[in-house]
Image (tube, rainbow, N blue to C red):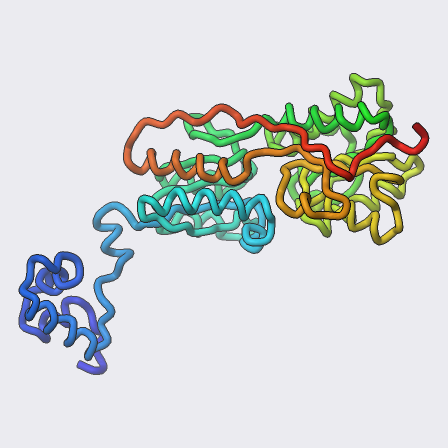
Length: 357
């Protein structure tokens, strides 16, 4: 017995009872006398049997108790990016009401990533800002489980929780224009698959033209052009990630050009905070020498020095909304995704008129 792997069947044979009786000791204790149940549990402890496999039990019932979350960047991003943290917090709190946990997967480029997604033991998938053409998206769809999207991709018949990205980006550009800025650099997170960070032709199409960043960028450049800003006065840098280090590197590329912008409009707060780091390192006063604008209204921007002017979105609320949609899908209820959430401008201390004005 000691050398044999202890399973529910082995324990039942040792006790001289049926496997169903052992299963009832764990799952339906009301079906057994207290004395019999305690005898089963005591012998199980002696033999090192921890109980029925919860995954196998869940699969038999058609439910494993976990919702997969597919993120576009590394798993560490989900724990370090302030926006992702708040979204996941709202999502987890909503799902736990029905007893579900979260299983995070990165939509990585490594071979076999889609197979890992296809084989994952989850009851449904929430996709967070994943490019539509990424192979893990097709893998999640092929699994046939309920799907909910946060931001992107846009998938026919799949409910999505989005914001008014274009409206928020226009508001950001209009704010800088209203202050008198006519030379405005733009920082965006990746738009093109496997593209190195660098200056971007604002007319070049993105790999995913319906992506969040492409939508924000198009709204900004259209607003600046409509105000008469010349192409050379609206340089765009595509950063390697939506992270502070990438924003710092991108700001260096913006400010090394022949025409130094008087303002930097970053399409995420993380990029804007990286720009603020660059300005601090190079003794550029903000907003005296350089105005900085973000997008998201994540908590770190509220306490930066100076506090970050930004476009606010209901971050945690959107995670809760995605969780509510997933709960309804798993119950088999009809779902109606919410309309795009409104954004609004939050003016703080990082923007001011340019010095020449």
